[in-house]
Structures are given as structure tokens and as C-alpha cells.
Amino acid sequence: MVLAIISIILSYLIGAISFSFIIAKWLKGIDIRQHGSGNAGATNTLRVLGKGPGICVLLLDMGKGILAVWVGKWMGDISVWIPVICGIAAIVGHNWPVYFHFKGGKGIATTIGVMATLAFLPSLFAGIIAIIVIALTRYVSLGSLILSAALPILILIMNRPYEILWASLLLCVFAFVRHRTNIVKIVQGKENKLGAKKGERRVV
Image (cartoon, rainbow, N blue to C red; front, top):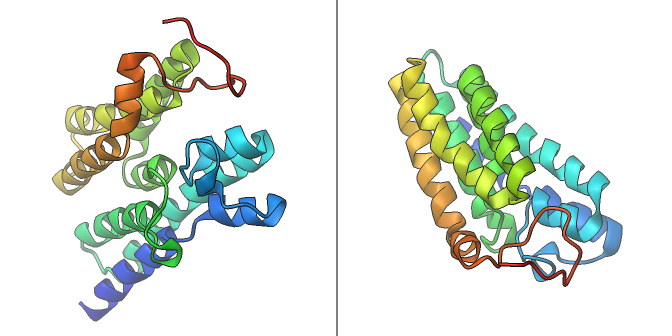
């Protein structure tokens, strides 16, 4: 039990490492949360700093989720719940990081890392659906929401453990709460599109 608690705390602290903030500070000396959308995540890093840093943040944030689940597996004995909770803890850390005054990202990349480790095929299929949506609409936020909504459905259809199903439902709620302003902008036709130049007007 002690090791399990330690693994959950450690997973939160791993998740709380904001690679978007660190890379923006290192490359440009800026606080990424004061630029672009104000979000400390891969998409805003892509918009503000370019493809290289954006992809780097995406992979590192996914890596946090993967590592957290494995920390739970290594330290949580045979319980399925501990890796699941560790994954959730990493996402909570990313969204509300103790190191950065609890102002973090929206957790999608870390969610991908967590869920791909817990349930690879459902995550793969959900990811493919999300990529298609993003390619067609150029709305990363919409693709992220579709990914989050598709995961519980696919996990249920593919008969994965109920612990993972409950985790995917919770993470879906996280995603929609963190993207609530994006949802309003999508409805209003004001959401930023992937690849759109700064100040570009969209026909609605």
C-alpha cells in the first residue's frame, strides 16, 4: 500500500513537469502561457514556437503518461487499479502542475500516452478517428474531444477491463471541461485552425 501511494504521488509529480513551459523558456525566454492560446501544451507550442518544439512537447507529454502507468505497474503489485490511478495522476499533474502554480495544459497528449499503455488498440483506433477529424476540419481541439469521447466507447466494445473503462470516462470529462472555451469557439466559428496564420480570418 505504501508503494502504491508513493507511485501515485510520483506519477503526479512526473505529470506536473510542463515541457511546453520549459522548452519555451529555454528557446525563447518566454512563458508559453502568456502567448497564443495561453495553454501550456503541444498545440500552442506548435503555434508559438513551430513544428520542431511542438512535436517535441507532444512526444514528451505522451512519454509522461507512459512512464506514469509503468511506475504504477512496477510499484503497484498486481492491482489493475494502481497503474490506472497513476495514469490519471499524471494527467492531473499536467493539467494542474504544482511547479507552475497549478496552471497547466489540457492533458490530451498525456492522456494518449496513458491510454495507449493501458489499452493500445482502442487508443489506436480512437487516434485514427481523431487524426481524420483534424485533417478534415483543421480543429485540433475538435479532434481531441472526439478522441476523448471515442475511447470509452471503443474500450467498452473491445471488452477491456472495467477499471480502464472508468478511467477513460473520467478522462473524457477532464477533456471536455478543459476544452469548454474551445467548444464555444467551435460553435461560434472562432476556433483557431491548425496551420492558420496569426490574425487569419475565417469565413463562417
